[in-house]
Image (cartoon, rainbow, N blue to C red; front, side):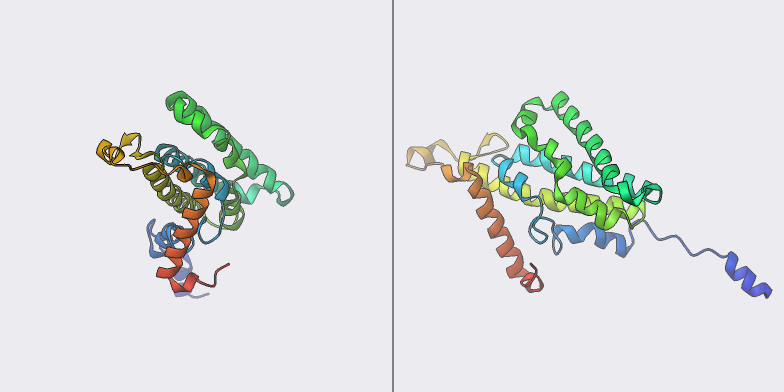
Length: 225
């Protein structure tokens, strides 16, 4: 082997930048063209239940971002050492540990919101978005890309929750984050809060409207099932 070839073999390929175009795409795609709720149609149940107000929506969004991002990171780091036959069990243990941590932190610092979220924080363990990203991405990709993928998918989920929560609280209670937005004179003139917005079907309608707007703006999603 010639000296030139040996020298070439010793030269390592440059490391991929942390925020390369590829990694930025991994982070941004779930916010739009590959949103886990409106395109992949995952995580719908919690969107129906916890979005009557903005604050629970924000807390739930932050919780899911944390769980998806760090479960992706952990599974990606240990993926080569996980026996194929028990990979789902290992994934569930990691996710359950992170969810328990989130649940205890919420009870310690935002107890009232924790009560409103009730069992739905615990049900993050079975959220299709979490397990789907572990299987589809973290088990095949490197830790940093997996971490970004988790943040992106969690944020994409949270974006829909916050959109629904804002509309439901504003029109259902006349407030945002607990602060009255609709003035008293509007009620004096006959304005009535829309009680339908406090019911689970309202969230389904709003998600449908979100999907309709998204696909109207992006024709490439029209045939996505």
